[in-house]
Image (cartoon, rainbow, N blue to C red):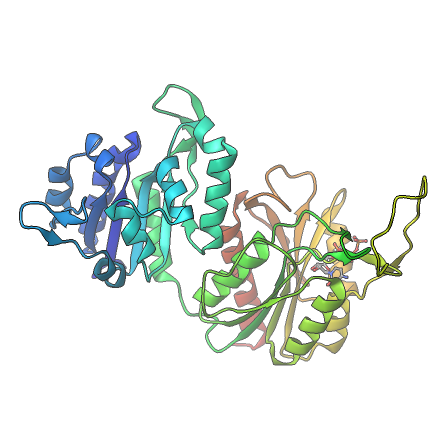
Length: 404
Ligand code: CTP
C-alpha cells in the first residue's frame, strides 16, 4: 500500500523521538520513500546518522548546508511529499506551527506543505493539558491538519496521563488506511451541516449553544477525501475547511441555515445534518440594544423550522437523509422515533451520559441506527475516525438501496 509513497517525517526535540527509527524501518520495509527533517534539538534525542542510515537519505536539519553553503529547499520538499508526518511534536513546535513562526527548517517545510499533514504531539501531561497547547492544537485542526492523538499512559517523567506518542505500528496503520482510502463517494454531492446557530435577541446578544462544529467539519473532510463534492453549511465556529474542494457556506441563524440547505438540497445525493440547530428563536428581535431598565424581563420564543423534517418531506427516492440525535435515557428508542418522524435513512445517536463525547469534545462515541438491522455502537474515538465510520455506514446503505 505504501510502495513508492513519498513521506516526509519531521522530528522535534521530545524524548519520544527514540520511537521514530522504528517507524522509518517499518515505512522502508513497505518500500515507501522517506525523507527525514528534524529540529536542531531533536539531535539530542536521536542521531541523524541513525535516521539517514535507516531512511537511506540525508537528514535535513538546517536551512543551509554549512560545508557547501547550499540551500536546503523546503518548497521543493513541500511539493515532493505525498504526506508529511510530524512526530513527535513538542508544545514549542506546535505553537510555532499554529502561528507560522518559521525559525527552523522543519517549520518552513511544514508551512510549504502541499499535501495532507499528520501531527503527533508528545509531551508531559501538564504541558499537553495547558490551555495554550490545547488552543494551538485546535488551530492546527482548523488548518485541516490531522492530529494523531497522544496516548494516555506512563510518561518519561514518571507521571501518568495523556502525552505518550502513538506507537509506530499504529502510525503505520493510520498511513496505510489514509492511502487505502477508496474514492467511494466519487460523483456524489453531499450536503453537510455543522456548528451551532445563533439566534439574535438584539444587535449584540444572541441565544446559542456549545457546538464546536468539529463533527460536521470532520464529516465534510472525510467525504471530500473520499471523492464527494461537498457543500458544508456551517453556523458560527472558529473552524475552516482544510480541503479547498469543499464549498463552504457560512450562516448564522437557523433561518439562514434552512435557506442555505433548501438551496442546495435539490442537487444533493446525501444530506448529513450534524448542526446543532436552535429549536427556538426570539419571537421579535429588538433593533436597539435592550437596556437593563427592568428587574426581570421575559423573552418570547417561537419554534424554528425543523430543517431535517422539512427535507424529509421533500426527499426523493434516491436521496439519503442522515440526522443526529442527542438523547438521555432510552436513547435508541427516542432516536428511532426521530428517524421515523423525520423520514430519515440513518440517525446518529449521541448519548448525553457518555463522557468524552458530544458537543465540545474532540472525540465522540455514537450509535448508528438505520431503519432495519441492529444499532451499531462504536468506541470513543477521534471525531475524524467517527466520521469515517458514519460514511462507511452511509456507503453500505447506498449500495443496498441501489441494489448493487
Ligand atoms: N434539526 C434541524 N432543524 C432544527 C432542529 C434540529 O434540522 N430546527 C436537526 C439536527 O441537525 C439534528 C436533528 O435534527 O440532525 C436533531 O434533532 P434534535 O434537536 O435532537 O431533536 P428534536 O427533533 O429537535 O427533538 P428534541 O430536541 O425534542 O429531542
